[in-house]
Length: 139
Image (cartoon, rainbow, N blue to C red; front, top):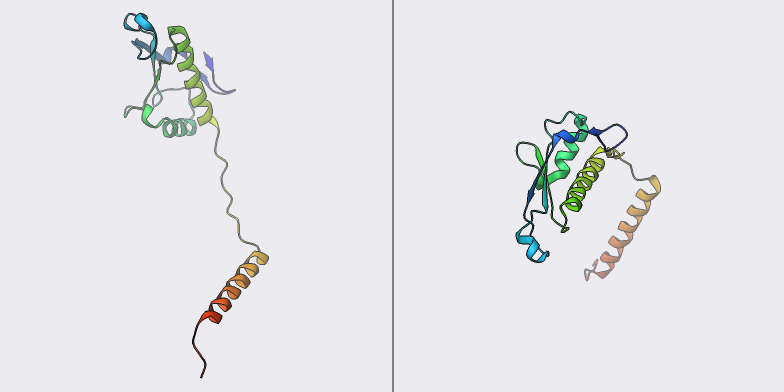
């Protein structure tokens, strides 16, 4: 069991790892060893997530989420398979933790009476200034 938050625990059996050859540095080793990790997790079917967290996670995942609701995280930053596995898992945990934080609802505010008066006064002054610029005479 992987603890993500105090209330969310992820069963390791839900995660599916596959190893592929990585691009980038590694010398001759890059052509022989599959060090890149592709971590897959079925978010849509996972019993570990409460429904609001699942919805936020699916929104946060963006392009990393397939149409079937499977989250795919690719890690190929390091030359070692173990470090890439740890990196992929850390990124998954961070993503779920971010989704677990409920957004604070915005409370609509109203302008104060003083700010309304100041706004109208400045509009009036600006209008008076523009009236003075006109070349019209009152004859």
